[in-house]
Length: 214
Image 1 (cartoon, rainbow, N blue to C red):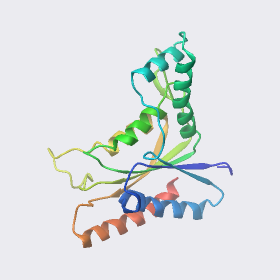
Image 2 (image 1 turned 60 degrees about the vertical axis):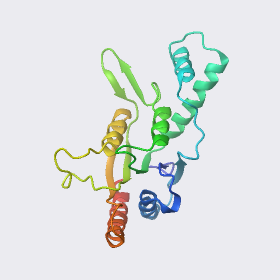
Image 3 (image 1 turned 60 degrees about the horizontal axis):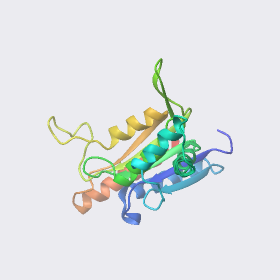
Image 4 (image 1 turned 45 degrees about the horizontal axis):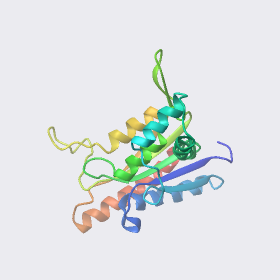
């Protein structure tokens, strides 16, 4: 990649310094900067980012603009806010997502961010001939996921509670054309202090290795 390569770190945990996923990501980013000192690293914290509501008025603005109806100036401005956030996301070349598992899925602020950035004509399209098609190309991501329980394939027994965190992220990224290059798992975090220290150390090592995959 050229000097203009940009990595976008999306923080989905509100935990700050206490966040296990963010701490592991710090190890990844340090290793990435050592490998690519000329690359830019930007951060988006979904808990601090001002995002428009994707409510009935936004949906009305979306269809008024995209279907070339008589969109009002207010609707055009409303839709432009979403498009600006989407384009800022799409402009990155590499992505790192640090996210905890909430109720077996992703935090609601991350879902809000995903709904804002995932826009027709910006990173996906649909046609009768081809169906849904991703519009992003040559982009990679690393997922740094924490969870209280261990949801690795080797430990989840049939009939156990399912993981909707990582499968959701994989499918969404594939939908818009971003390849998942690696995953870092910080789990289980609900354990005794000695075991937690081992989990965090293993995740830090895994994160540093993942930097080479971006």
